[in-house]
Image 1 (cartoon, rainbow, N blue to C red):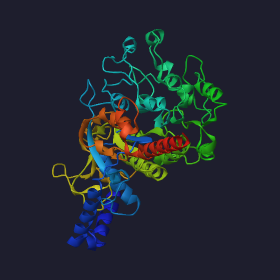
Image 2: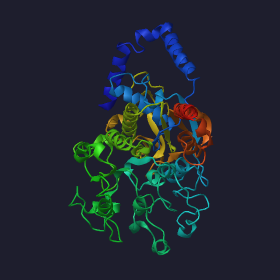
Image 3: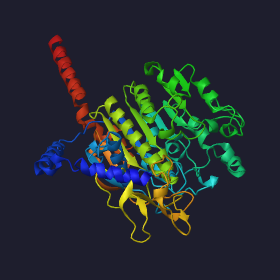
Image 4: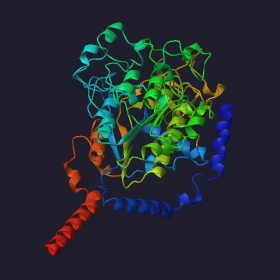
Length: 524
């Protein structure tokens, strides 16, 4: 049945005239290109303002092939062909490539890469917030090798700071913003070896609340790592797998609430309570919406779990009250999980949701004073091809059979992963299964229980003050240095005295001084 539906779709697309009539006219393409050219020429007037606000959107595992496929999906969800659609990140004027390798690994993991794009130094595979001298799983190599993140640089400069993720908050990407750990897997003390605990190393959940104790906004999943062992979860009280894990008996959530009770701090665990908040009355917000990672957006309970867009909306409204501005890290973390499971539909819908969040952030901020960067930590061995026709569903079939085994195949394929399936000694015939199912595992060339990361460069999209500094091909650790430079935080600040955005204040100061001297002279 899925194969028949796909053939019908192709026939309909041909009958309805793809390409459309205006696309057959050369004037259409010339006009489009000329508009693009005029936009490019306008970028010669560079935005060199000081960035009051910094936003980093990190699509975990969002390689270039994922960006392209998500663009097509976004268009098709809007009843368009898809290929001509623009993602919000496509509209950013500056694009670069980032090299993702770790110091000890050609194909990176999310921990070492997060240390690069948050702390400004490349690091080893599996470690967060420490430099390459720290050895994975060896606690005694932590001290002296810690590196701080741009989130801390921003906090030290008086800005409000926030972290929003669709994973657990002590997962690899968010943890590099605040933690220093030789193992990304030390989620709570229950996940640590006894020797590491005895040597004084701290679990990542504990570091979330202790290392930078006044993070203004923290939203994502991960309740179970904050609660004592066997403590029932507020949302799933009868499910043992969601119970607390901590061996030290600490209730980190209760401790946070006690500390923030006089600081306009609010803890929420469901969508209803989050959306009921008045951000003008909140200075500190802790939102933990699942015991571990948040659910895929396609499976999200819209009563209990907020979308990434809704979390970003609230985060910005809380953070932007600070006259000194803010830094916000946003991770679309489950793009990566979908790919690892071979579930391309889950991964791509996660990417489309992150693009919605990027659009919402754009509406709540100004390109004049907000530097927004969108990138990925690494890619995946995900791709699509097979000479599919214009408008073919991104999850559909290639328009031909294999000339080797004479079976159909989906456009989307993985280089490796759980989608490798052999039936009666040959490749599975996809026409017999529902390849449009949300959890369909796309076919893979090599059998693995989990699909792997890819090693190619990832895209970096940028808009706002100093966005032009992200151009060409860069090492991944360059990203936070640019963002810090734009905001005049961290080590590069000398240029800030001459920034154009400061000129009106400087002019006012000299004018006031001249007036004062003139009046003084007359009085004397």
